[in-house]
Image 1 (cartoon, one colour):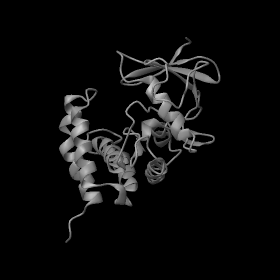
Image 2: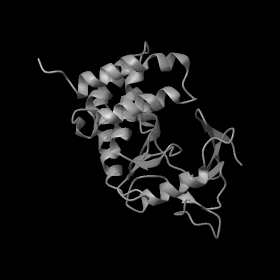
Image 3: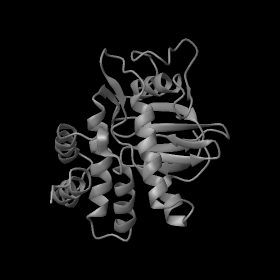
Image 4: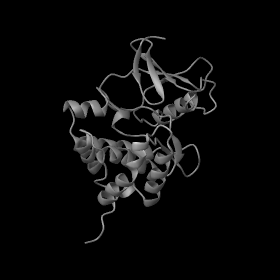
Length: 230
């Protein structure tokens, strides 16, 4: 295992070599084998995700692959996160929101592993999009499941809205990204938004302050996606 090159709320990323990295979950968080299986499933449909490397004999497209529950070896991508690109002025908020919407729609065109469902990411926001020379790639699939796309839209929106209503320097850019994401909110549903708020409140990685922001965040989303008639 090489040097630590990145850390999130639930995992750390270590360098292996120029082509591969190791993503290791902390405290037995998530299921790396199932995550890798979903990544290979969507990549087979042309969705932009890092390649997953498995041991000989493993089946990367099977949810029961014997790959480690904590360790995931995947392609090393180069490029900033969308947040880093926004901060550096390499991408504007309107473009960022438009790219997020396109990534959600492209993902939801992929059939789920259960009949009548679609693959959901459930954590698709600017920190989980890498802007590589080959285009945007989506990372961090630990929360993925099959279901209704409205929930995915609801979670992407509420994650952005929590930042937009907070007292942070990036609040205004986050609001602009959210507005662009919801420029055509046809895929966001009332049920999806309500379930997204419930799940976000129950997320153990949320701080008390972040949970307190959920009411204002939902109100902001509704003002953009479901405006009242004058």
